[in-house]
Length: 101
Image (cartoon, rainbow, N blue to C red; front, top):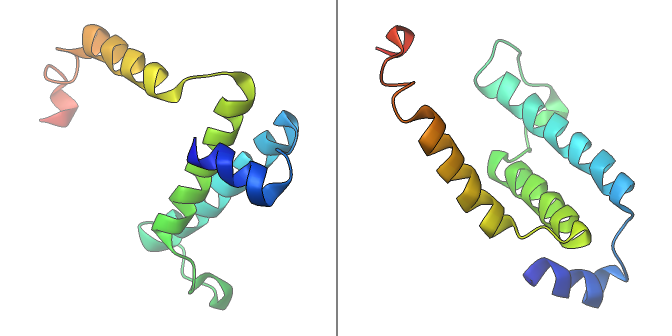
């Protein structure tokens, strides 16, 4: 609701669904870049030093909410169903995984 109100007030209109999918991919790439430099083996470049992990995650969430609004997906309901699915499917799987012990 907050995203929708912002779009209608400041953004004029939503970008097309395909444009938002491309933007989502771009934002995930920006998150991956920070993760690779913070937790992986790559070193930071000068241009990356001001990047904020939380802000990049929020950018991803923003675009995902835009896509949900555009396609009529209730993300809260979808997330709750997804957790239920994972719980039913994986309730013992990870506990019994020797690699995780």
